[in-house]
Image (cartoon, rainbow, N blue to C red; front, side, top):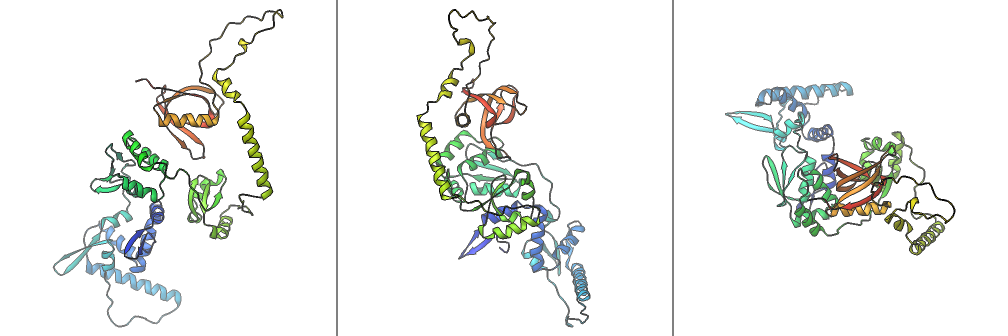
Length: 437
């Protein structure tokens, strides 16, 4: 609650989703420093206590020697402060000092045991994980079964458990946590900001067996077309792609980035723009002096609207000659010569490879989405970075956006049996065909 992750509103506790998600994505060292700083405000030198118990192997430690050790630490800290402040008078009274480790027990950092008149303490599992983070058990994906159950192993990252908890209801907790996806949990997830495509992509990418067909069909029915179009009332901050990693790894600037739309485009608080400009200048960035406004000059807006209207009218009147030409590619050999002008030299006909028709970028995108949503494979002519053209047959999986903001088609090359991604802008020809059963 002191860190803002939970708030008391009226008679109920409210979880601040954005704060919890930000905390779970912090580095483990930052999480540990934040927790120990809050503990030191309640119980000074608490981290020293934890390391002292940890150094003895995590076994039970008697209270009396632990009290004596802590009393020496506190007195040494008092003498250090008095030395630096040049205050040599004793501020302590003649009464005997007494310290209680109850605050550490109440917060779940220590476990209390008692035998006879003596009390004993040892570290809780939570404190042991803070001092010595466990090794990664390798669990990065969960199991999504056709009966809408999610089986998440206990060794997964806490951030993954948090996101699953927003989509499904926890029904069992053991070596593998079990969740149940229902229509109510999906409606709650949409209210929390999840979008339809993001939700389906999260389940598809993080499930070891993919997204079952019946689950995807049912989820699409539950969600409908909720959130296909959204408005955002924010100030946008754009960064050159050469500076993306630098600005995202800066821990001083990162708190100002409220939302990451795509790499290099972020939403920031409009009331803190001046403060952010100063911070950017201090860390080697050069923010522009003016804020780009949309729409700009009213005269330019009117001129732009007229131009777009003229383009729209021209497009409606124009016959789509490219589509007619690409439907059956014309070859120079089909041209008829003028009678009596001489016989052309006969050339041996080359066997021309049957290629799919040429497509515009818009047609490539539409066909790719149709193939992903339907049961189709794709035949393409792909232009590589070194300008080579490859004739490929692909089993598509999804259309996504890579780290550079480019739309790519993720699929499996049927000939090489490799799962690769292909930039949509580099696809020159495309056609769909039904896979063989």
